[in-house]
Image 1 (cartoon, rainbow, N blue to C red):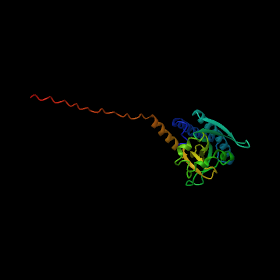
Image 2: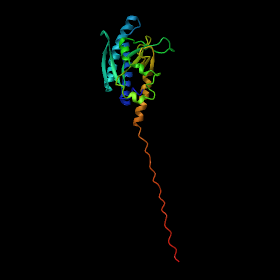
Image 3: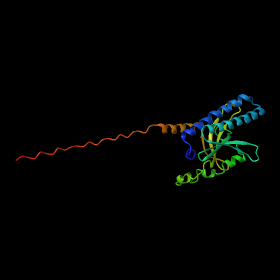
Image 4: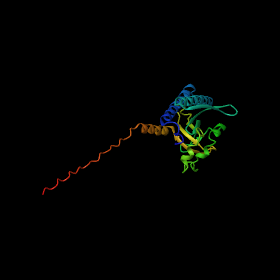
Length: 223
């Protein structure tokens, strides 16, 4: 989280993730309204439209928050994807699903472009020493956008007009695991708290004056 928030302000990050969450939800509703139905051709058509709407929503969220947004292209150039550079991360869009309600979410996006995005993520492995004693000295030299993360969504054929889940995922470099994952709801709540902390007035420390006791000198005795 510190690498995510080390360049942009909490208010800027809050604006970005709020816009992402709101506009991705709208993308689900718009695509379900434009392409209804549950047969396979309609599901595929709706998924393609939803992805296009989500890509546009993601770019607009990054631009409106004052972040650098760009477009990546696969090799061969058959697919393009949005990238937002936030803190030490390059963030793109991804899709997750899970086999059962109790199983962990699995990243469905596994193309070569995702492998390239997360190629340096091995340094974020919680088992390594990146966040150990040398944390301060190491994190300051990490360039902007060095690591890869994904804003992920989970959809359902039974309820295509709303996402089942939206979150931020930091996958392992080989895409076989996940180092960190937070729901967008949790991130937004955390950033709201950070913004509120910054707006709270600092408690004024009252300085108490020390009382000075004046001792009246004794009058000399008259003999």
